[in-house]
Image (cartoon, rainbow, N blue to C red; front, top):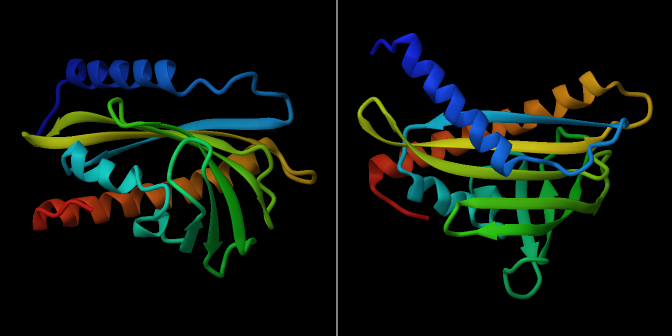
Length: 186
């Protein structure tokens, strides 16, 4: 399917508006880096959201997570302990749910501990309905802010975090699209 430059520009403008509205990280400091990543998923929003909203089960689509434990009820302020698969420079991460908006399809989290170098990390992921190839799809935007570890540059830090997020978003697309074909909601 060919798209005119006008359609592409309209799509980019809408994406940029979503980023301005939902992905403002307050007072990014000089020793921090921030970025926003975009993924178009060929699955309806409710299928994708059924995975993203499960703060207690990130392993359903995040390939570097081997398990997760949340104490108590799942609500704003809940903390999860995430077990990280080998191959990354970490084994655990403690993460707090900062925002869960079921109507706007927004999830925000902050890392509050763990054995890794991602200090003052927070992220926001938003989902937006769109049409892809004439069928319901989902525009996913994930943004983050994190301290740049001593001995690293902003570019190196952003590259590392972006690579992890890209991998997570690709996996989210794969799982969501498979569920959509099977007509299953998680």
